[in-house]
Image 1 (cartoon, rainbow, N blue to C red):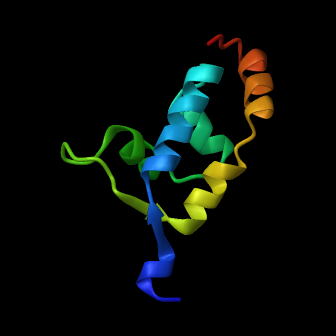
Image 2: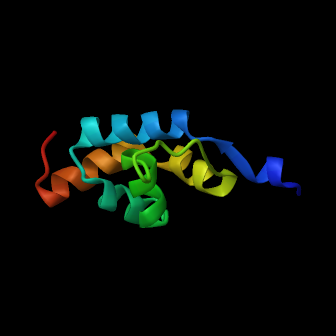
Length: 84
């Protein structure tokens, strides 16, 4: 696998995480934990790094973000008493 195959554009995955946070009310660390994602990656994806947005993320992390299930996250939010 070459370097180009390892990375994907970050913007769609950032948008998906923002949507899941908005819909569920869960904080980003909870999404990172539930998705088995590195917390540093999720934080940088959402907040940027050194004032700049992250432009790419590893393909495997993108797959994990896509695997986050909105219905499961809504159930988790209810169990935790979080309301969006």
